[in-house]
Image (cartoon, rainbow, N blue to C red; front, side, top):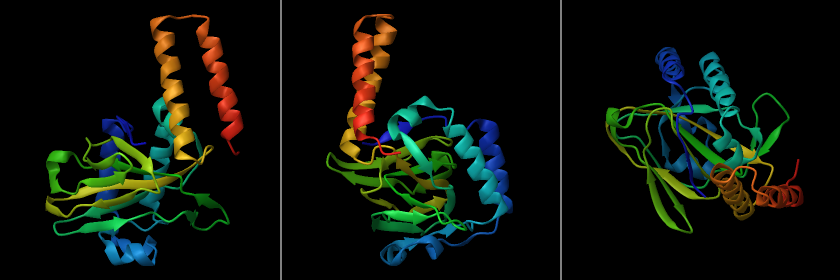
Length: 226
C-alpha cells in the first residue's frame, strides 16, 4: 500500500530544514548503503550524527506524532532517525530493495524496516527528474510530491530515483517498524479505520460504529506485535 501523507511539515518547519541543509556538510550517500545498494546509489547525504540531521529528524518525528493519517497507515512501533539526501544533476539511485534490518547508530537497537518513507523538501518546480518510482503488485508508481508531503510504501518494494536533470532534489528518508509487520494485514486495518471514520462522519452515533470499532481492535490485537 502506498499512502500519500500531505503537509507533514509546515512552511516554517520547511524553511528551518532548508536553512539547516544549507549549512550542513554533505558526503557520499553510499555511506549508509548496503553492498548491492551502493552499486546503484549516486547522491549526497548529511552524516547521520550531524547536529543538523538530528535537529531536522526531531522536527519530522514530532510532526508525525500529530498526524492521524500516518498513525493509521503505519501503526508505528519505532521510527528510524530520519536521514537526508541531495540529488544534483546527473545523480540517481537505481532499482533496489531496502535492507530488512537497520541498527540505530550509537545504540544496540535494531529496527525491522516494514515501511519506507520519503518526505520531499524541495518543491517539484525546483528540479526536473528525481521521481521516486515504486513497483508493487498493482504496477509501477511515479511519485513527486509538494514540499512537506510524504509518501509511505512497503520497504519490500523495488524502488528507484530517476536521474535529476535540472536543479536540486532535497528530501528526507527513513523507515518505520510497524506494530503489524504484514503489509496485507496493515492495509486491511487501514481500510477498516477509514471506513469507520466515514461512517462516523455520515452517521454519528450509529450503532454499527461500536461493532466496527470492536472488529478493528480485535484484529489489531490478533496481528500486532509490541
